[in-house]
Amino acid sequence: MNRRTAALSAALALAVLLCAGFLLWRQSHAQPGTTAQIYQFGELVEEIPLDQVTESYTIPLEGEDGAENVIEVAPGRIRVRRANCPDQVCVRQGWISDSSVPVVCLPHQVVIQITGGEGDVDAAAG
Amino acid sequence: MWTPPPAKGTRRLTRLALLTAIALTIFLVEAQIPVPIPIPGVKLGLANIVTVYAVFVLGCGDALLILVCRVFLGAVFSGQMMTLFYSRGGGLLCWLVMVLLRRVLTRRQIWLCSPIAAIFHNLGQLLVAAVMLGTWVVLAYLPYLVIAGAASGLFTGLCAQFLIHRLDAISRS
Amino acid sequence: MRQHALPAIALAAALLLGGCARTQEPASNQIFAMDTVMTLEIYGDGAQEQLNEAVGTIYRLEDLWDVTSEGSEVWALDHSAGDWVDLSPETADLLAQALELCALTGGALDLTAYPAVRAWGFTTGEYRVPSQEELDALVPLIDYTKLELEDGRARLPEGMELDLGAVAKGYTGAYLAQTLREGGVASALLSLGGNVQTVGAKPDGSPWRVAIQDPDSGQQATLGVVEVADQAVITSGGYQRYFEADGETYWHIMDPDTAAPARSGLRSVTVIGSDGTVCDALSTALFVMGAEEAAAFWQVHPELEVELVLVEEDGTVLITQGLEDSFQLTQEDRTLEVIAP
Image 1 (cartoon, helix red, strand yellow):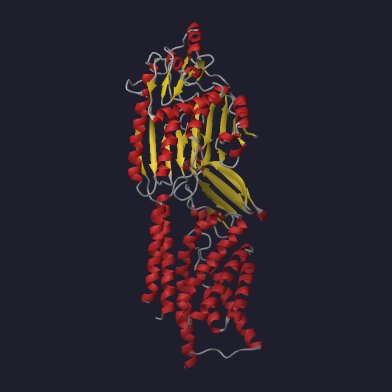
Image 2 (image 1 turned 120 degrees about the horizontal axis):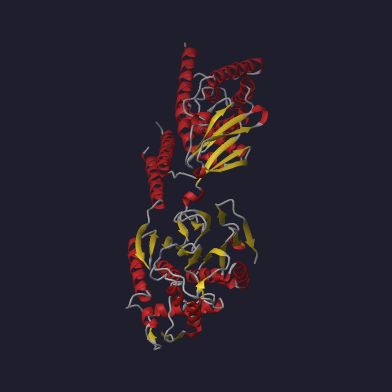
């Protein structure tokens, strides 16, 4: 094994280890968010304060050419319940309830993300 | 080590067409297999065996031609024109990295070249997604895609290396 | 291999250590002082010593200014029967600043309103609604201009009483912040019973996010969030201490002109600025003034460099223009209006 190979494999291993470490760190530091934002074609179409949801309901989101994602909102969490996208990745990702990873439907250009909203303040005045 | 004689005209065209067809077939078959990990952009990417093979055996230009044709036809045949954008962004960045790596690595290090290229493929895809979706939050997937790229790249890289090794053996016999 | 492994390991170590430094936990403490709960968080090297010192400072200042404790300088002033009382440098400094603010606000802030606070029972918790005659008799006793301050001593006419409650926590926050900065602290969060004082920004460089309480929906609801660095965020509101009698609500912020709870149409006033004493004093004074007068005051005093969040009785939220980018309303059913300079 020559030096170049060694250096490149070390860099590769380091990148993988750093990513794995970061994911673990993020998992342990994830804070429950409160506001879900639904984006379609890069525009905010819906904003839902998840801490104020008391009963589950669904939002049908229609895109171009019959594209459809049915989004289910529940107290404190949100998911894509059904979709007619080819890969179904968004459906299989399931519920999200914190800001660490958004739900993305690449074929239909839909993104659901959760932001801290008022959950991540440092102090309260009053 | 055996390298095919520089091909011109019909011979070259036939070889490119054959490899494109193989890559396309692998791509379409793989598309039918659901990915166990529900993260957008994660897949085995078996069609990249052909790309890696082409970069190292045929040369960078020919590899690019095969890649572009396969990506375009793949989008047409699978009926998902949307994937065209993602695959093109990822594929081009991946190809570029492989071209650079080819200068410093030999055929014996394809197993290493492929995962690095795969990581950049995923990075390119993600950047395209960020632009298309109009939000940078998709970058939250980057760590997953780096790990997935390293794993799948290692697999396809080993496949390609094995393939080249076998073809060498055949040509020598 | 070795030649390349070493830098790689060094890089990995640097990244990991860098990561640790960024997520470093603050030295923190929660104490009960000045009739409230205080939470102190100090980041960086030597934070623990700074924290201990800060706690000591708070208790020392509390002992100077506790209006109910016989050993305090404020108690001495209130019970000197018109004689001069020698003051510590901190008390003299606070009194000088506070008197200036009383004058600046035209008496809307008055340090000598203590007799009214006591008449309504806020000092003991035995709440009562005083008769009109009783209040009329109290009004002449409320006049900060009668308080004389010179060369580190002060005197107050007999019968009048002084209380620093409206400025003490703001001053304490500013005092601690100054001490921490001089001690080399770059990042700290001091929450003195709802009076928030920040030193620098968060360790990661982002601004502190301070929630402002919604005066209308219980203790925990947030009206909005403001992002600050190196500033104080101080709220005065009728919802903080109050009692109800005969269907009326009476709160602890007194109008010096009537010796009765100030009814100006405001539910709460939040003042954001770099001087905690000014913020604390103004939050009380502007609450007494009311929305219109408060906005006018802000417009003619840009030199104070403060920003305001006013909540009116009908729920309307007024913010001054400097907050347009840093204030985020979380109760979205409210009307938000911006006061232009």
